[in-house]
Image (cartoon, rainbow, N blue to C red; front, top):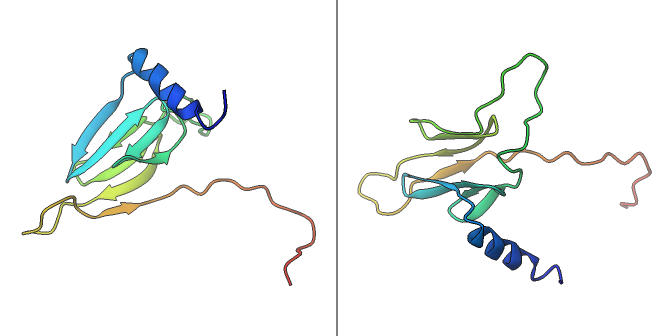
Length: 116
């Protein structure tokens, strides 16, 4: 099967396997936590599954996999991912959202730069 069709195949298999997801609505946004990671309003924010162990220093407790506080702070796997705010008074639609992306580790190159 080509890689182009693979996402469709997995989505279909997941649906038929009755895999569950946690879906929360807050301030007009839809937050979904499923076996493939975290989504906010249909956009994938984190691709690490919630069931994978979280690397942590020895002796520290396991972080809560998914937490949405009353103040709108969204934590996923122990890291702040977004802050959701209520919409401005008199407006319609979802409130503002402040994303906190986690930088991905990139390999450091020890070679010479080719930039001029």
